Image (cartoon, rainbow, N blue to C red; front, side, top):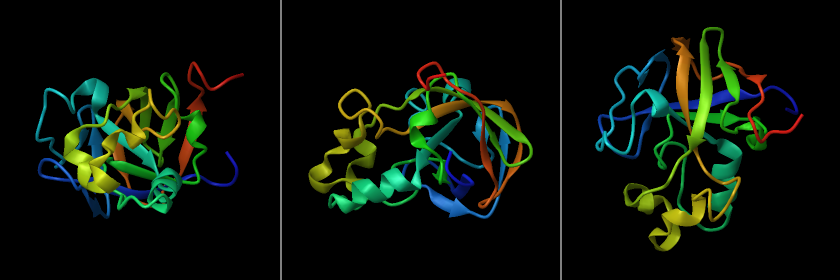
Length: 163
């Protein structure tokens, strides 16, 4: 990672998108306290407790003409300065001083985020169609409190991140 990676924004909602920024979050096994998903069959749970996305990827997608913004694609944690190619299944990251997560898989976008994309093309961030542009799900290994500005540190590389 070049420079210090941080949490740019923490996002929650009462169900659905967009998720709105909050000044701090209590993170537990099922994600952020007070954050809910409208469709619990497709979202949430231990293996999908948190959804992460990079501010730099959001900006690149927006530069293509899409109206995406932090939180509008449903991510809980928007990172800044994190080399997004390191976000691979199996990778462990420390968020702030207390929270430890493991990336479980890339997310599959759905129609609920179509408003973030020109022409409703939410598949613009589908991992199988556009590798490297997807959001990622994570399980929480150690809970705690996080805030925007907290460090994001790679603890263990994932299976595809290389040596």
